[in-house]
Image 1 (cartoon, one colour):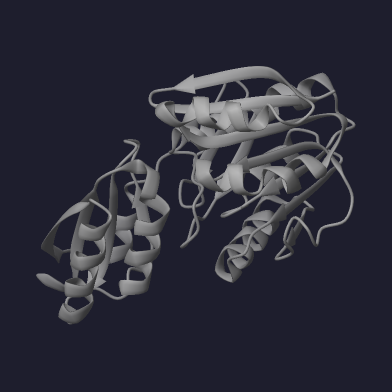
Image 2: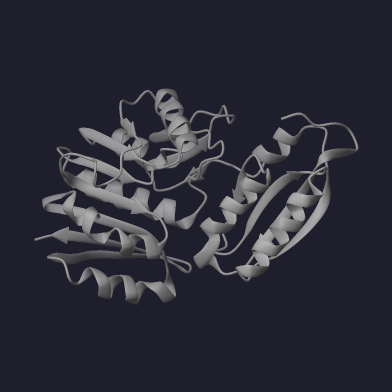
Length: 280
């Protein structure tokens, strides 16, 4: 990304609002011209960068955000190097005593299982609570049984699929409907020296069943694709559901009671919830 001294040809957009529609806001920002999104630790908070020449895009973005109940502020962006500003928001993140996630541009060596991630325009840096909870869930499940295969639904940057492979899964498949995410996930897999399958196939198109199915997506989508998710589970397998806000947890749990599943574990971090089910 090219920048210049003084006022760069960018505007910094900070947006906040109801977390339940965050993915829709991300799409709006990217469609408006942001080359990537910084997803804050708070449930409803995003930052993007738009070309300063795109006043029409900003006006359209304002209408779209208002329709979703989101607010935003825009300011000229001063930076000699846009990339430096982008990268400073991502730091090495300790997931557990054994597991750590770090961006590729941090050269420091760490002990244990290290996942290196270049997020690009795909979600998944380890900074968000839902990602951290999913990684901890995978670590716990794979520590108990190394003969597991894992399906990561909505793989994004590939962070969960890569983590599963590094934690001992015998086979890992990551799927995503976004072509850019697939490209980034494959690149991150090569960077980490792991062999995972990254595919644009849908759950219905996918063949086979898995010991662990993990889906870190919006709660309404978890409900919508619940049956295909359960169909991909092996008998005695596990389903890890994340992207669930505290106020959405009961609705998600009520929906999944229709399947032959046992609630194995609930994980909480701030306002976010992760549910782990076991297939009877």
